[in-house]
Length: 255
Image (cartoon, rainbow, N blue to C red):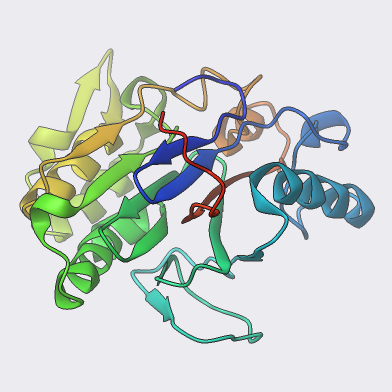
């Protein structure tokens, strides 16, 4: 995927993994930070969200969650103004845009024939089944495995995902083959997050998927990376937004 804010069209749906570029925020929130409560000025976040809304589809309402690093998936089939606590959101409504905010975690778009969804997948949520829960919901709604497409956006890759022994211990408690996902290089441990995501998708019987090769840590100029800033002693950084919806009636492009 291009590092520009490019909207991708897929049959009846469209989605975008936005970069951190093109907005109004300053310093370590520069420039397209779409998250409130991270230390950025609210007026800048508001203007940034207005920018992505206009670029993606001003006619529709953007739905975001209060992300809690869980395996909770929410289905929206009617208007709802309540705060949504969870990490996956699914709908079939033409008037809605579903979104997540990330900064090293993986934004995952899921497209069926009638339903569409998006996941915020951190390592905790991935361990606890956020991907399986979302995909199984599609299947329960009658979507066929062969009609489902999954696109995993930019996230923290193995070369940048250094972990400590406590992470390894926790991993083993999940009854997962730690040797497959965690390797040792120069006395340091590295976690292959992308491989775990891939296995979770394929174990659900999905064969049509894409995994971004972009490492948010190494590409910190184009994507917010919590780990990059944390290693520099900065606790707060921005969050890029990812959006998905049904295409507008006048949109016929594929790409």
